[in-house]
Amino acid sequence: MVVNSTSPMVVVANRLPFIVQKNAETGQLERKQCAGGLVTAVAPVVVETNGLWVGWSGRHLEDGDHDIPEANPKDNSPTAGLKSRQVIPVVLPKKQFDDYYNGCCNATFWPLFHSMPDRALFQSEKWEAYRQVNEHFAKLTVEAVVKLSETNPNSVPLVWLHDYHLMMAANSIRDRCDKLGLSIKMAFFLHIPFPSWDIMRLFPWDDELLQGILGCDSVGFHVEDYCLNFIDCCQRRLGCRVDREQMLVEHNGRTVSVHPLPISIPYDRFVSLAEKAPQVVKNNEQEQLLLGVDRLDYTKGLVHRIRAFETLLQKHPEHIEHVTFLQVAVPSRTDVKEYQELKEDLDQLIGRINGRFSTPNWSPIRYIYGCVSQEQLAAFYRDSSVAVVTPLRDGMNLVAKEFVACQVGEPGVLMLSPFAGAGTSMHEALLVNPYETDEFAEVMHRALTMPKDERELRMKQLRHREREHDVNYWLQSFLKSVDCLVDNNLTPGRL
Ligand code: ADP
Ligand code: F6P
Image (tube, rainbow, N blue to C red; front, side, top):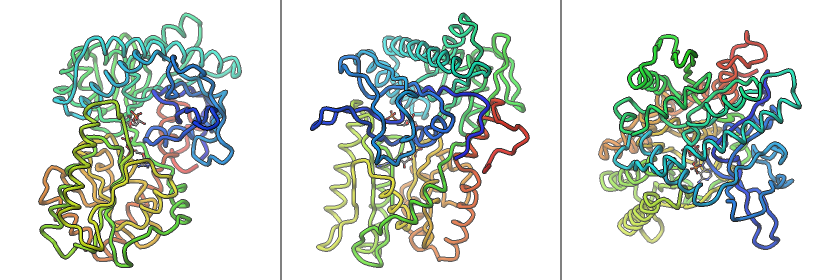
């Protein structure tokens, strides 16, 4: 990847792009890769720009030993090139971190921003912890800016804040930099949906939150609808003057620009992984795989999807012994009750369906609860007939794009929920409403029986679009939006 940035960059995100863990045998600290859209997309930028990354390493103050180990020489992940000197770990007492991360980010903002307000908890002490932790991130970020300014005295550093964990850090960063006489540019990117005003207003401190985001110079969302929701909230809650055409918000004498920046994947990397990946072992040559790959999260619609598969087997018994549903679910936020309950529900549902339909030689659902390597993932994508990407709500969804990139052989079919950001651009997918079980099952049937020429046509268009609009395109578009692209006459894209 080539990243032509005029500014040295500080990425600030809740997580570092890896977790630091103690090896049980050697007692040494080592890096462990973790799944998630943010990491996949952003890590290469920091490596390429020789920037800094401020974030949580997975360890708490009580754990002691907060050094960041170098990457294992055998590590070939996108974050392997990140040196420990480029990493600024956020170390906090466990209780404080828990209140901020689980209590506020995961229990309040995650469901609220995914328009599931009944699941959201509003607790003032968790909100207070969120503000304090954002303040701490702000302090460390300014230390990072100082460090970058020393090594790059003639350039203005770009601070790039990520996601709903850090919506209250910008104003503190700005004030602290002003006091030190440091110039910076500051951008925010939200990796999840931004909800409509009628949802946002349920949050008791919505005015503070909006002002927090407006502390940045530039604010990015995946798709235009989320941008317009944000602009609407600023106008209705804060009374800001706004320009919807130009996507501008005036606040406190400053003009904040808003940008739709659909995130994407390192397309070529997935193509080459798919070209090299070993064959997936199937029951027989003819077996067709339906594939789901997700964090185990209630927004991903896993239960709805498995129920639809049950309906498919019931209504189209010709698929029995010929079709298998392969669901790969990576454990996520396992300290939160909702996630624990979802795990139990899914275990039970899958057990019941396997009990109901299994024959001596076949089980309908193969279920992997864990993280799989990118090589293995690419093999699953390539050798599946249908990818079932059907979240109830999702900011973008990178799995849909990864599947498309990996279709290097016999083309498969992408089933996609219109409630994912990806649904707004991947027009050749079979769109399906995950709440409508019977129709969902019929679309599965249609995908499994689609003629080859139709599959080829759809996949060709999908692949073309994703190849052109890969993660590099996203980065260049972002840099252009903050006036940091080396040559502003360049069209963002494959440079
Ligand atoms: P989110 O950011 O909500 O997790 P995305 O679909 O945008 O959702 O991104 C998920 C990322 O995590 C993808 O890059 C995908 O390859 C990766 N991933 C998801 N599940 C697994 C898994 N079981 N093992 C390894 N990687 C996974
Ligand atoms: O995409 C949304 C997001 O919260 C990312 O910020 C993160 O990479 C991913 O989901 C995984 O979530 P968590 O960091 O809470 O495990």
